[in-house]
Length: 397
Image (tube, rainbow, N blue to C red; front, top):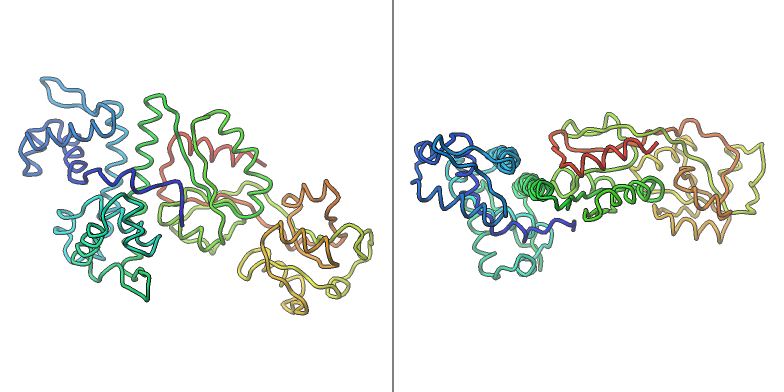
């Protein structure tokens, strides 16, 4: 799944330097950090200078009393702590936690993400600005660290193993914390270059998001918003891997995982829609049998709207001429050219209804009431821009 987050932007950061930065922040001096980590003070000093140069921020206030975290350093320290907490949770899938912690590099994390996404070592190498031999070497190093190789060749492509899936998910969340740190530091420098990646279901894309995006970007004109359009399972995978920040769509209720949190925005209801001039338009005595006499367009199996569609016919779904599609553009075109019917949210079809392209039929569907929500990881720590964006979503009733 491709998003705004390019692993190439962090590939040159040094995980060992980040560990030493964390130690100095915890201990309050390079001497104490050296005692705790076994590194010399010159090595620690070089690591801190390297991080400050790459991040463009002063991370410590130096005095005779030691080294105190600057405002930027405090922000980075909190994010860095979270990075290493996530990396520590990868231990069940590695052979030796000590060896893993000592030998893991930032390049390993970005290789996990890029190879999993692109399915080719050579393509991943080009994406990261690395040589193909370097990517192959990093993949071999990961294979030696993990309980099984994270990747295996399948035909002309690379597939991720079960262990690789776990490592990729953790790597994605760790990298997400680093990207958030970049945004936090940019905010502190007055750049206001926040960013958010949203997994948006169809209703959200046509009704809710346009106003929220315009409002948010008017407040933060340098911020970036990326929409990822996919089925729910793909969006949840991206959410768990850190490549998506928020999903906006219908609530799954008890089916949502314990690692995710849903927050309800509003309650919505479905209606049966048809083209203007359809034989059922204007009738007040429509029955379920009337609805079953016409061919239908239904969304994919597993979606809340598909479940509502199946309940409408007590599980005996009309099979003749059934077309499956979740694209409003396709649905609108098919309805306009036929007597087909479909189920849509009134909010999703607001434009089509206002323009007279589609009409809701007079057949009440109270059993189709559903909650529209935002879904995030339970441990998600949003940046200022992300928090502000989510608040706008929660207020968009």
